[in-house]
Length: 441
Image 1: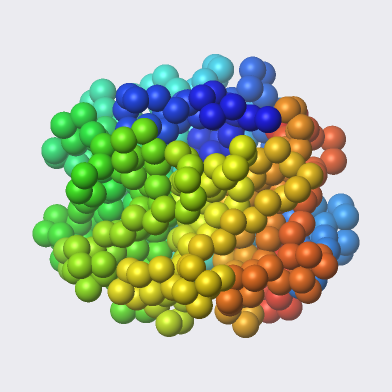
Image 2: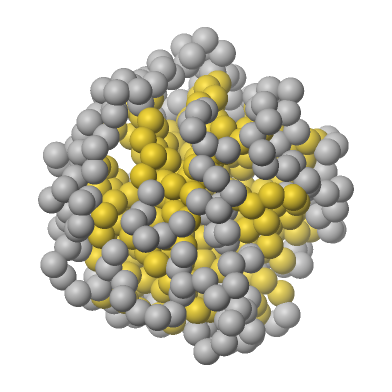
C-alpha cells in the first residue's frame, strides 16, 4: 500500500509529484518531480455515452497526437466548437528541468498544432509550471500557470488563437504576468470563464509565510478587472487554519466565483470552499463568512481538486480522501448557502473505491445530461503502473450503472506504464466524453 508519509501521487498542476506530509509549508508539499528522462506524451481519449472507448476516435478510442521527442506534459484541455480538442501544458526545452508553456490543438487525421512559448521578462531555469487551460467562445485557448519574475513565482497567462499563434488582443502580445503585492510567491492552479467572457483564475499566494487562496479576474483584453476586489485580485484566509490552497475555480450564472481546494488544520487537510460576490468580496450568504470546510472521514488527507456549479447553484467538489488505507475518489455537494446537501448520498459526501487499484484521485469534473456528474482522474494499479480513472454519478450521488455497468472505468494507455486524465475536456452533441491526459513511460 502507499505510505501516508511519502508516496507517488499524480498532481494536476505539476504531474508525477511526490507528496510529503510534513509540518512545514502548509502541509501538502508538492514538488515538481518528473521521472528521470521521462518522455511524457499527451493523449485524448473519447468515450461513448455508455462508458466504452469510442473505436472511431484515434486508435481504439485513444488519440496520441504528439510525435516529438521532448517531454510534453498536458495539464488541461477543452473541446472546441468544431470538434477539435485544445490542450495546455508545458514542454521540456534546452535542458533537463527547463520548460516552456505549450498550447496544442488536436483531432484525428489532422496534424497537431503545437506552439511553445516563454515570457520575455521571466527568469530562466526550470520555473515554468502550467496548470490548466480553457477555450473561450472564439476557440481561443487560454493557458495558465506560474513563472518567475524578479526572483518570485507569479501568476502567468497566455492566450492563443485557434491556429496556434499568439492573440495580440490579449495584453498586446498574448502574455500576462501578475503578482500580488503582499505575497512573496503565487501560483495559478485553475481557470474558468465568467458568463461575460472574463477570465477567472485561482490558486495560492504566500503571505507572511502562510499559503492563502488567491483569485484574480481579467477582462477579455488581459487587463486586471478592477471591479473585482478593487484591483482584480483577492486573497482569502480561512480562520483557525495553518494555510490553504485553491485547486479549482468555477463561476455561476450570476458571476459569483467559487474556489475549492484544501485547508490545513493541525496536521490534517480538509476540503475547503470559498465563494466571492461579483465585486470580489466574500459572499457572506455562503456559510456566514463566504468560506466552508468539509470533513469526509477520520482521515488526515482530504484535498479538493475540481469544482462545478449546477443549474441550482449547488457546488460540487471533487478530489481525493485517504480512507481507509489509500486515497479514493471523493465528491461533496454543497447547497447555495454552503451546507452539505443531504439529497446527495444522504450526507452530501461520496467516496468511490476502484477495488483493483492501490489509490485513486479526481482531477476534473464535468456534467453529463440529466445532471449527472463525470469525474476524471487517475488510479494507481501497481507500484509502477497507473491508468485513467473515470466515474459517472447520478444527481443523487449514486454511481450511474449505465456507465460501463458499474459506473466506473479504468483505461490504460497502450505502451505506457503511467497515465492520468488531467481534464474532462467536455461532451459533444452526441454525449461522447473527451478526456485529455498525459501518458508516461
